[in-house]
Image (cartoon, rainbow, N blue to C red):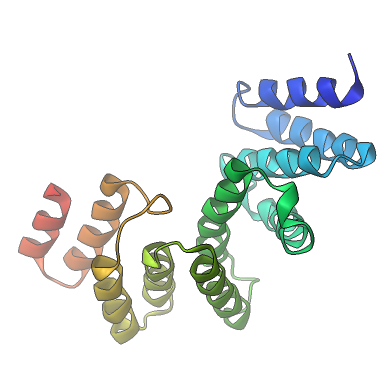
Amino acid sequence: MSEIEAIRNALCRTHDMPNGPARNAAAEQLVDRAAQTGDTGLLIEALLTLILAYESSTERAKMFVPFAQALRLWDEQPTAFSPDQASRLHWVFKWVTSGMVGHAAIPLATIEHWLAEMRQRYLVAGYSLRPVYAAEHALARHIGDVDRAWKSHHAWLAADRDEMSDCQACESNGQGTWLAEQGDDAGALGAWRR
């Protein structure tokens, strides 16, 4: 078995590992091994696997670095991405942008930059801006900008759903929670019923 085949098999096995430090460490090692092969598609797969491992663990803050590496590869060699990998890269953009909100060490200007970056990249890729508005809403709520939160909430609801949208239950939960926080109990119950 070649090194590339061995890494591909190991990447598949990491998806069956329990979430946590052991899975993260295994995925980190596979990124290093994939980088040494010179196979860009394999490196992309390893980076996306590592991002998923971090997102599914208590080490979410670590996903920013492999995401930046994957995004740089996308900018330099978009044809190296399979359609599935391109879709997953755009999907994890939501995790990264929303994930920054919970980290006090990340300046607001940086979060705003990544939100604008997400908006631009979704437009170029032809995706709905629905997830962008959801991320903007989360940021506005976090910083206490009620006017912006309402504006992004309405834009979120008005935007079309597509393959980048969160599941209906996740969206309804966030929308209902916002309405409940604003004292609109009937609206919250309506959102949660969707």
